[in-house]
Image (cartoon, rainbow, N blue to C red):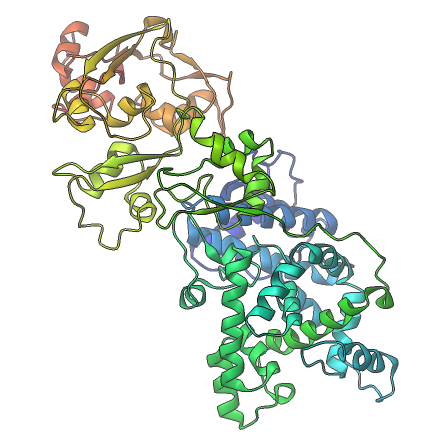
Length: 631
């Protein structure tokens, strides 16, 4: 990636030491900036987030503010997507990147005429702090408007210079942001306001969700606050919102609104004033409590609170006032997003889970529709084995179709999750190693409170991003089968034939590790000679990764990159790769092979082959493994 070396060094040094960088200042004479020419990675991961962040920093240094802003918006979008769908990301690195994005955005503030349409709350509050606050006479037009429109609200609205400054902010630099909020309001207003009323709370607390998240259920902050009401993990847990490998109820619009209403009710009961309750929602009740105790003052407008919290309540009041009559404040009429409408389907108890992609195809809709209706889902499937049964939201009129036809769909061979029945002697570590996933994934996917205690016959759910399984009888493969006998398990059959458990699952398109006597299993699939790399080269297939190819051909990722001139680990289908150097040849292990028998075949010592492939001299070889043989 051709980026300014100084920019990269500054950012990566900060990340490596665990410190976030502040707004960066560039000296045009000291730094020679080279424009970024490479396209961003086409995969949504932390590398892509970092690419957009570096691009933004460099664009800002070149004075290209709009390009910098667009790059930061892209970085924010990818980071939010990762937080939703990928439970395996490095959360510490993600948090640091989020902080760097926010601070870089803050460094752009002086040059931005308008804030972005999806501005995060900290950015708005920082932008608001730049507003000049001037004392106004009681009969000033803005104050008169606030008094008139505020009287239509069921929340206290104060007419003062700080609320006027917030109004002006939304009419100028925050205009694009507020227009987006007005459009989105139609999607959630009825849902949220009805829940608030049912919980005995003011309906206009709806506008607190508006400023917290911009009515984006996938909104997040660098402090890992999530959802429409921006609950942090510990507060969400305290209010009964579940968070597992599969779901995050902080993103569920209905459940999060109930939790927010009850939390705000508790804050109001403690502080006795809505202004203080809102301040506590933003800064935390402990901080507000300590500030009141230290000063002896319980008037929000006089308390010495953090700048962000000082701006928070007037921002809420201004948003509420403008929403009462947007055109009066210069906002053009626009169509609102359609209301959040859905039908709830209680999934049958005998359904282990629903694959959202398969369900969407069945219902004739895009998978995004189901994701949007069920933003609490962190994966592409519903929680496996959920008790009570999971309630899935689908478009109105689609529920019965799902119930009638989903069970008849063919099982996808690349299923996202497998059931595994624990065998005697199993450990979480051994199970994770068998399936090629981390122990953390197994623990999280099954909500294991004590991962050291698992019992035989216990069923565990293993998330697997399985490659497309090739059919059992391909023309270029030979196979061996085995008939299951009483007391057999998939693990013992795998060990008996020297193959991996996950290979048995893939070869036989198994949905789980449960088998029955008389069942015929494919236990050996040997690549034919045509499937081997010719001349030490390999053609990349759909789903291949450089890491998987390195494992398959017993080389390192660094070797593959060096032999093929790759600057990154990105590869694409059809690409020709050199998978061995000129001093080696390739050999595929077959059933019955040992290191000694292979060594005799090539006139070598077993230690030569072991050393070349970085394995132990007595290691058991699995059929299908590719070894490098020194020439």
